[in-house]
Length: 606
Image 1: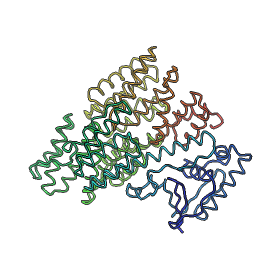
Image 2: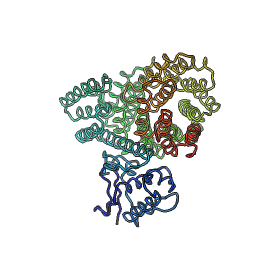
Image 3: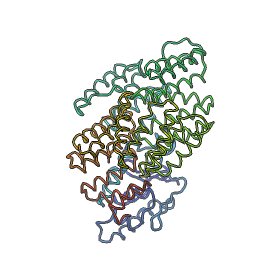
Image 4: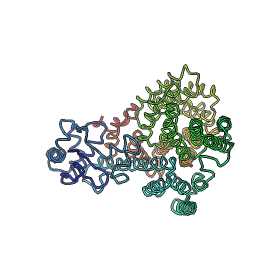
């Protein structure tokens, strides 16, 4: 009999599609979720402390709850040992695990998609377990939203705009202030021919943002109802193969020169020519180029870029063009990385690596994959992957690939307090950036090198790097680089005694790093973490609010290192159970610098 464990929504157990024996009480469900979702097996002592601290005999209560689970799950699931290991038969289905593996189409079949983890379950327990459960609920809510978003984009790219409208409607129901989600819903209405509905949604959303949040909507949202601005294929064109080829080259050149709107229009005309010439290979190339242009050139237009890439992927798959498949998958993984939808990013990047037909595409996919692994808190594995990417790129004469790998390699070493290695990698990255003429990327390694100088007490050198990164970031209009530069400038001012002025810069860094909907959330969290640290150090009243913001963001996205840092901040604020929560989440990361802080904060947990 096939066993299915449903933890999303009201938890239940099914056998062959029919309700099975349900464990009694809230504690068995909490125990089952903890065993299934923890990074490693937990000792009986730890489980008793987390879930049964209120019992007269915590270990007896744990044994009873384990027995209750065995009665419901045997023989398909075994629970044995100390630490307690959970072993599932090959055909056991667990809904939360299905969400994070496979394709969006697979995940759409999960019955509880969009429902809360362990809905209605609220066991009396240790504060560390309560923090864990809240974090997991936020995380799986984020995963559900990522699945709905990807499904809606894929449907729209396939020409099924009606289904896209339904999926995007479900998406915004999960978060009524998801600006990206509303932009997607409005674009779907436009694609479905519902222009009046699109305008209604746009006006209502703009008003809601102004009234409830006190903010002006971004250009991404305001542009969403414009059919010309969001089209993938232009209405004009020569309809010739030669015209399509020349337009792709011209469009890519325009994007590289910074003429974004002209480049986008040229690439849309290129796809029109390719389609009219019935050259599907050129159409796929044009759509990939258009998707990359939206993502890397058109600020706030990752949603349109992802739609173009999904359309390109469908054509490339049909043609069997492994190179374009790999490139499209890598760029889709990159988009998911920016917004910290890491499970989806992993899925795309695994495919990009598997499909890569040459060393260049393989090195490029490794570079993005290593960045994702670091974002999730696995810095050691990230260093290994990025080192491989740099090594594979070295003989190819493609300095951009090396610049990317060394910039993120430097970041990994910096976050681990390995300053000598960080400096070497970042200086290498800057040389490669200049060799490639990739000046729009320069502020990133510049700001990170400034952070190395700052950590070593070289304030003058750090100040120069931060100021240069900030100035160039402002010149090219990149919110991420502006945020990184502003963060560094704030730290310099505080170090030189200007606390009030420095805090204003740090607050500004946080705001800049998320001023459009599709900025790199890791950088926003990095800026926010620094703001929390300095606010606590200098008794700024808003410290607790910023820490809560960091905790919620890190939990929803799976940025586990920042989740640990958030609980260390809570411990510094004197919040009960925060140290134990930091130690609990620390099992997911491998950064020795952060783990030392956890050990110093919680000696018993070390």
